[in-house]
Amino acid sequence: MSNIHIEQKKMPWGLLLAGTAVAVAGVTWMMWPDSGISSSSAEMPASATTTVNESTPSQALPDQTQREADMAADMANIQAAVNGERSLGTLFDIDAQGKLSISSRTKDAMVMILEPFPQGPSPKDWESLEGRINKDLPKAAAQHAMQLLRSMNQVNLAIEQLKKANPNAEAEGKTLELFAQLKTIRRQHFDTQTANALFAEEEGWADFLLRAQSIDPEGKLSEEERRSRLEKMIAGLPDGMRAKATEVLLPPQ
Image (cartoon, one colour):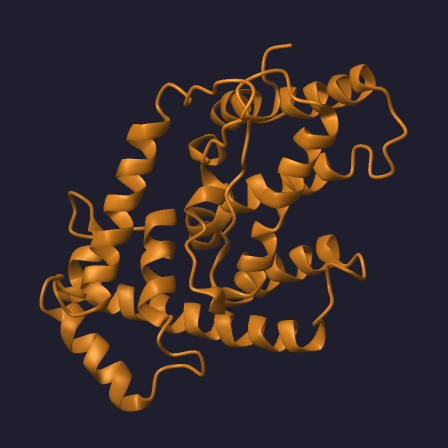
């Protein structure tokens, strides 16, 4: 997924909303998972890469470096497991009761595990994956992990069909419509509780960024009007999202 690029100074609204539009491109990744790029940056927009304006020195967000380092380390661990350098079972978290703990990290792991199989794993591939996962997980947790992987594979295949049916979705103004279909597909293959654990944060950001992009698509509002509308949208976000959205999209005036 593309990062949000920001400048640490007062940004013209054209640049600010352009940055939002770049972030919205992440919805394309969510619908088209064969890009092979993690959606973690959709969940944590404040960890975005900072671009430097040649005339005005730029300073990184306070905790940006640590967040990016943590994200890079997590992705490196997942990739190592996918490459066979460590057990796939270590990618799945187990709670104190020995049950699988499901989160957006689980989703990132599943995306990368399945990425080498754009048409879906063969029976032999599934057997190999199951054997590797069984090595490090309790039996019940391993079975649950395999169920999740099979469901994720079905989601990927359904989304591939959606992609083929809508090759020009963004140009045709169908992004919101397809985003709604994406969420429906996910909940056809995962129960609501599991789908929320895997995708809710990512989907919350995507929904917000899509709405932010639509604030002033024709550029007719004043800078003050646009900022005011964005502030109202941000005020309605949950605490964690509100802080990150303010940090990224509402730099000090």
